[in-house]
Structure formats: structure tokens, C-alpha cells
Length: 86
Image 1: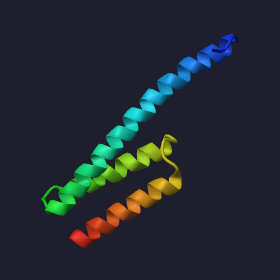
Image 2 (image 1 turned 180 degrees about the horizontal axis):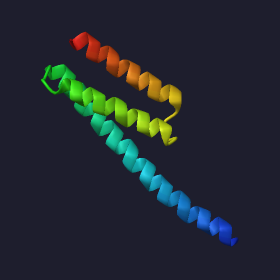
Image 3 (image 1 turned 90 degrees about the horizontal axis):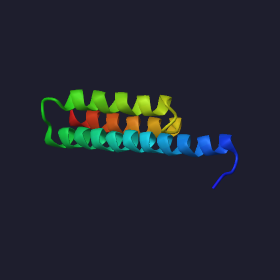
Image 4 (image 1 turned 90 degrees about the vertical axis):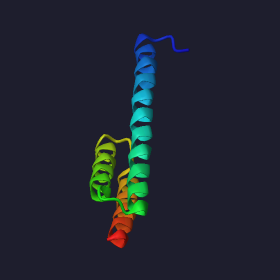
């Protein structure tokens, strides 16, 4: 355990950030799965699901939760599936 006050604060902050990042990543996985399922089923709202997934990926990237190349790869794969489904 840290002895310095600022380091104690950083421990608390990092735990809080970790929980937030974990929640965002979990939501990201859920949205991507929903989009994949919608594309596989060929449902009418597949395009909305893809747009929501791409938006969520972009937000996670801009917040620094995902690396920009990881976000680009995920979006690219999502769009490739969406274009093939058309």
C-alpha cells in the first residue's frame, strides 16, 4: 500500500477508472454481438445495429479505451460483414 497521499488518491482513481473501462468494454462486446446476430439473421434493423456498433467502437477509441488500430480493425470487419449481407 502506498504511504504518500497523492499515491493513495491515484489508487482510488485507478480503481474507479478500471470499473468504468470494464463497463464500456462489456457494453462494446454486447453491441458488437447484437450487430453480428442481426447481420447473420438478415433482420430489418441490421443496419441500425451496425451503425450503433460502429458508433460505440468510435466512442471507445476516442476515450482511449481501445487502441485506434483495434477500433479500425473492428469497424472494418463489421462493415465487411454488413456489405456482404446486402
